[in-house]
Length: 408
Length: 227
Image 1: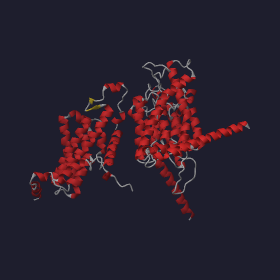
Image 2: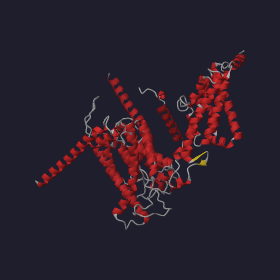
Image 3: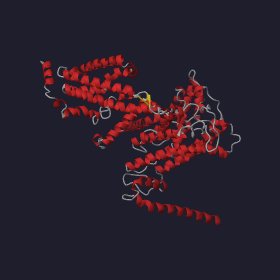
Image 4: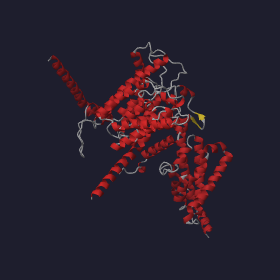
């Protein structure tokens, strides 16, 4: 009875808090409306209000399904799904650093995680501040609502870069991606390419020394007294970089858990799988796309295993290793399933996903300059997604026309 | 008889003020701005991507195209009444090819380094859409003096865009201008890096797009109505 009571009180307190927040928002709202003194920040206010509360406006035209889920809610789900991979990524940044420094045995969990947290946090801040800043400015200039798409992109961008990526080039890449991959196409929901991947592609081609090779994957400097400076010549290649140049590394469970050098969020299959479960359970991402990416990658990897290629280590990499290494899982779960840039028809999702996986392995194997093929594969298939949809719809129309004609 | 008529038209211009009448000034200057061959007509994009990684070749390319367009316009304008309509494209091509060859030889003789840098793109001026576009659209209908101005205007309009693009590409891509280091060593030591993407053609396209963006934002008359 007491328990019930206290629960009731807590619920009530929550409600009161919510109410206070609502009242506060209502109180300051007039300032942001036409003629108010803070009218210049109208879009910012609107953005926060709709982020905190489901907007009260309803569509006036057309037939609509009434649903509590709007795109801000969907984006929030994806961000939550990214959290396990992000937390693990932070830990792994610390783990790689302490291992390289030879201090892993004596370091506590807090130290290791704290190091990674401090190394990754500035990247997240830079990505969100630059990206949201541009979104806010553009929304204000165009007199539109702030679009929520950057909630996810802003989290994805720091997760797909190496830990040593300098902050200023991250800022440049984020700005480039938001403006040229998104805003010029008309903003959230209109972009042809995955925004976060455009940021990565920009970095990859503009600053290759900071994005690939064997010196960027392990943080080499101490942060606020945590960790220690590593010697200048320190190198650690990713497993894929290793496979492209030296030979396929032995398969180990570390590759599945994620205790290997790599981009911040991409290394742990387990953490990504947790996110994948959440996405699939909530129905935000399509299992069809996700599954077919893995099928496509496996099939092509098996083909390469069977037929081989001369002097090409990568071709001999077993299919399961292709799937767990590099950005394959991360791309399959969080990028290929992007509802805006992937195929929208149900059959199209299978085709799209299969080709993403297949292209990723083909690029990895056949182009030694790009040991990581997932980024280019997804960007390439982003271009073809509308074409796939078009032909799926057309073939459906043709089939039905045929049926109509035969039944006449 | 026909030749005589051409000469006649040439000497019809009486005084200097007529040479730069309002209409002629328009012919000369609109290609630099509101009717730019690259940013408004979207012609000659290919070479704008190919030769703009550095300023020097971009300027030489721009000047070469200016000279060739001007002379080709004059020659075709002089011949315009004698060229049979059915073979006019071939005649235009022959004239352009001859001029391109002359320019190419001059570059090889006097600016060998640049000519090596420009490599095939000097020869490929012959395929530059601006040239054939001006010959067809202007020189075939107008007198030699107007055609000359039109050629110079369009060539300079093209050169202007090339120079802007090359300026940004060389500055941000190599940290230099005309091959001279501009960005100080201190910046590199502080962690600044040249943008490798600037040296690749896609970035030239994006810079051209930005120029178009800027120009259209400034000049509402260039914007199509949205419906």
